[in-house]
Image (cartoon, rainbow, N blue to C red; front, side):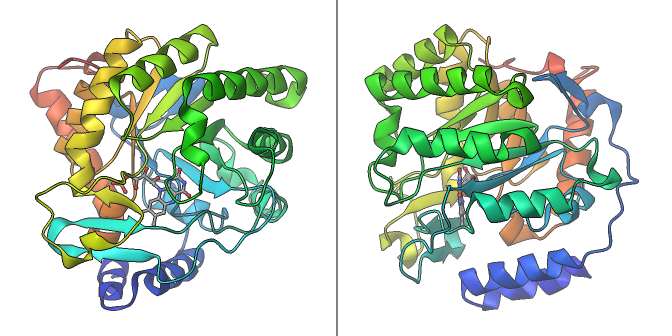
Length: 351
Ligand SMILES: Cc1cc2nc3c(=O)[nH]c(=O)nc-3n(C[C@H](O)[C@H](O)[C@H](O)COP(=O)(O)O)c2cc1C
């Protein structure tokens, strides 16, 4: 029923459809009873993941529908991107469907209600229902901020202790200059300050820190990031954000719009980055694979390419919420069929 009504939303402009989805999900009846297959469970990053499927950042920017997303079956939910101050983002329209390609282009530019409001929303959820749930908080910088690094540190101060892990987003293409933070000197400086801040604040001392990067980096840039992440004990990397590239095979006329491309066309692009990063880090850092996942076998491929966990967003808008249970069943079956006991044995198998 929910699936059918949410599918009808494709006839509305995409941003309006998203707003209606969020409003609808707020009133979903909660039911966390379903347990996942044992072969999907993992203890990594100091956390117990019941299954490896996470909601990618951008869907629940303001922590408004976390409970509903767990009801749909996600093993973890990443909220955000959250900036210190509220901001409206870029001018509309700024989300475009590429129906023929099963993709989306967005140029939102971190529209969000700011870290204080998000903190309030998270505090409201602090009841028994969410006690064992894994919630990542994805942090960004305000468009107008003068010192970008201070924005990430401020996000850690305001929201860090309410998170299970902290994701540092330096890869969205819609905030000018943001992706430059991925370059050698900049990322080293950023990471050192973030790690220092974590040491300073006792309540976030043990929280894992993950960096989310772009699929549009070259080999040298990937190597730099791998070395810096290893040298500074970064817990994980999230691979990848959306791409500003437009593969030749795109069919939709909407491919002309500016912004970050997600969904099916991003699948092989982000997988390549994942495989390279798994090699560059010798499998020593947890990798979260994200980009174009729409089935259990897509997840399986990401995991074989080096991901310990995966996330998705765009396929949810094309397939509806029943996608998550379907993916989990398919993935669990694939693991069994290939003779593995657990997902852990599959990680990096094809690299
Ligand atoms: C409409 C939209 C908004 C997004 N907003 C964010 C965001 O705020 N922060 C972020 O790190 N990634 C954001 N993303 C990127 C996703 O988290 C994800 O990395 C990307 O879409 C690839 O996954 P997918 O192909 O499953 O959608 C956004 C994606 C979409 C489609």
